[in-house]
Length: 126
Image (cartoon, rainbow, N blue to C red; front, side):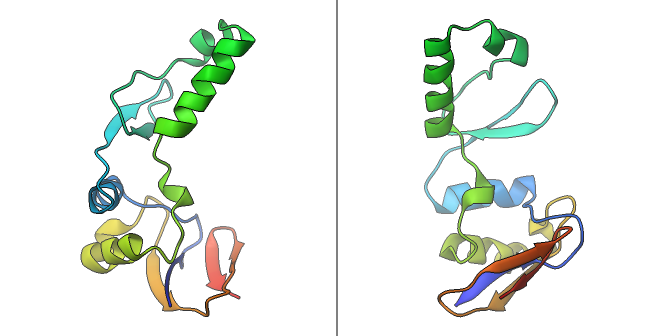
C-alpha cells in the first residue's frame, strides 16, 4: 500500500494549497480562517474563532459546547490517515507544492500493518 511520509527534519505537514485540494477531493468546502496567533485553521463552516480571552470568559458548559462544535466543524489534515487515497493523490499530483513549511513529502510502499517512526520530524516506515 502507498503511504505518505516526511523525509526532512522539521515535521510532516501539507501546504495550504494541498489542504484545500485534499478537502475538495473529499467533497468538503473549507473556510480557512486565521486565529488570534495568525495561524490558519480550516473550518467546514464559516466561523469566527474565539480568542483565548473570549474563551476564558465562557462558563464551563459553554466551553464544553464550543469545544464540541470545534471538534465537529474543524478540518484537521494532520489526522487524515497517511494511506488515504485522496492524500496520496494530492501528493502525487502536486509534488513539491504539497509540502508544508518544514516537510519533504514522499510516497513509499508499506505493509497493511505499517507504523511510522519519527525523529525530529524525519519519518520512516517500521
